[in-house]
Image (cartoon, rainbow, N blue to C red; front, side, top):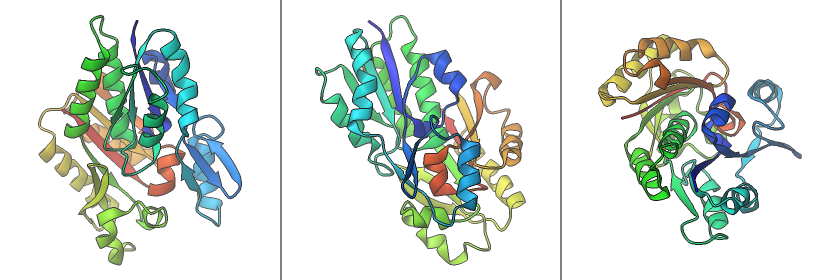
Length: 278
């Protein structure tokens, strides 16, 4: 019997890490009108952002169904494995509830569902850490789930978006609504705390925004075990931030990823995000 890690695809984890760590992903959906695509299966980030920027109508997203989770959980449980499932924040998506419903189809203790309280790169760091915990010879579902719960409460993350338009249209803006009056003049910096999008700062341009991101991460991340940087359409600012913060975490625990379609629908082109785990 082993402990296996399951997540929804909004964690934006790279395929090589999925394969290396034996993680099972349940895809989220993005819809352009009547066309439905499974993230990472039917549409990749390059295809998605090309279509996002050319489409006259903003796409919508949909969480995996309970049946989607059950389909991927069944073979793991049938093999005698215990499963820890780490999902995107429940305040941002119905994915957590879908996973909970699916977990209820199995014997008590077979599947434990953890709310990451964040999204994309912060969620990814938690999934990788959980998979590393699960690979330990003495790992139990209880120990892996307890560590995952603690990380969900202690991670730190920021995002800088080019505009709040996509968050507003997607209904995910939360208290960052306070920034809407100046969306054309600033690069809003936001955080996700307890699953809610919160306003942090509003630098006037990209250069000042990158400087402010570095300052904030250093203020809140004195001790870092993992660091992740993510982007939607422009990798250069993300690589710059990774280089600026390279002293915080070992290279093997530092990641750069491209944000996929489910989260990209809401943050839009030109966004970057940074997350750390203590």
